Length: 129
Image 1 (cartoon, rainbow, N blue to C red):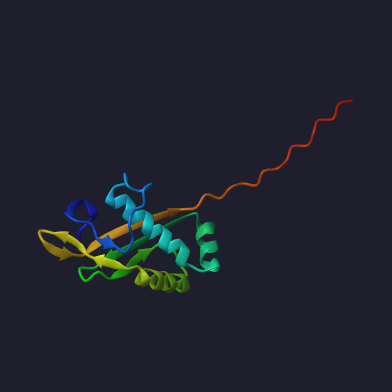
Image 2: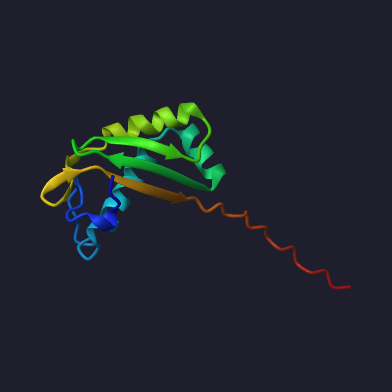
């Protein structure tokens, strides 16, 4: 099992960089697409639990056979974990990571932060007597 700092080539995914994303590193591009795929694939109930949690950690592995699997998360609900596994199974990895010209397993930790905004209350005007 390798981390991203030890590999030579990042996993290749089924997304192309746009003009705005041209200057982004491969690592940042991969994480952005993973977050986008994760958030767009979840149901509303799961997303509300994510938002209530504030920070969600998802540790997963892209195997040498280009398959994704969740290893660990900080969520307690088994329904959400099975839903997350379903979302990550749909994530299409074209080519696994490469180290010494061989495909290897790579572990990722994906952190998703949700900022809960406080409601803005309108100030009442001062009363002058």
